[in-house]
Image 1 (cartoon, rainbow, N blue to C red):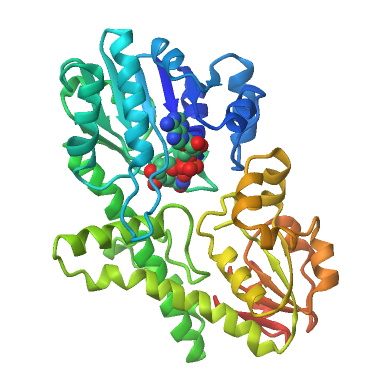
Image 2 (image 1 turned 180 degrees about the horizontal axis):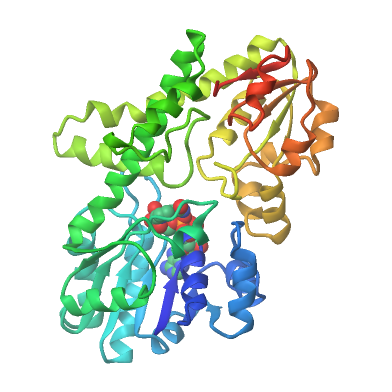
Length: 438
Ligand code: NAD
């Protein structure tokens, strides 16, 4: 199929490259010229396992190219995948501005193109957004009826940053919210050949499933971290506890997101929980469990600050800055928040994150760092050794092999383990080892 992908961020870039890898002809569209140029040069605008090689390959064969020109993309495709961002507004509600704008642009181009084009929304949005907000915009610009003159579907994305290419080719499930069967058929054809169950459901159900997933993931992480903190306080090995807990598959527990570790963050879980709780409050629905997941997460982050304070040392190293290992994504990263708290308390900090450094070199996240995190940019080190030479205490928030192999044993520097290091059991006997994830 000939496919346009709107938004070349984490979801759009991975979707575009993987669909091109499956044999489709894909044109990516982004308002950001840096991302368009990177893709056309055969480089991925995000750092992810396997994505660099895949983009180089599919751009090389001509299966993927990028443009800023919406009209050109729509003229050359039968289906559009919308993957623009839906961040939080300051009050926690969902920002739909980018979705509205791109829907207008696509609608105007579809009107010019003629023939049936199907618009598939992959961005996360609250139930009702597609039918009540976006479909009327599309119908106005197309000058026709959705489900008749223009196809509409919602197809939420379940990738996890860090393993997103693998997740695309082996999805936990495929959810197709369809306005009409023909629109659903188009989405089903896109993914033909991929494993996993396909669920064809009404559009608001598809929108809501994504929130069910992300709210539950946040809840699981919060549960595992609180359990870990209590176990640690009582002198119990929480990983032994969780190993046995998870082995009980009769209760059907997936181990994903259920390991005591560091606080969660990123561009999805916090903002999706915020907008879900905001929507519940607006509807006068009491949701005490959901509304306490983010405060629980904030308490967990504070525990890491307190561990540093307990050491009494001032020169601190931080390994990892992105919101989790395997990605360069800094949005709502708990490690950024941790770095800011330590910086604000006057600690002499150095930070090393190889993925963030690589992305900065490529230019992909340079603007984000320069505009949002200029106070941290000056603390970024070029190597593991630079941090180790500086630090009396090291916080380890990544499992990057280069970092793991360089971490010393003994009592100096003090190692504060945020990720349950592979050799945590051996290190526990060492005087300089502390952890959040014992
Ligand atoms: P992102 O911010 O990385 O990418 C969005 C891209 O859209 C940006 O490159 C931006 O320049 C571009 N854009 C904005 N307006 C545009 C327009 N009018 N035309 C073309 N491009 C435009 O966002 P993301 O992390 O890829 O997330 C996208 C959506 O998918 C969000 O709704 C998010 O909640 C959801 N989601 C994200 C993940 C994830 O792991 N990141 C997973 C599942 C779902």
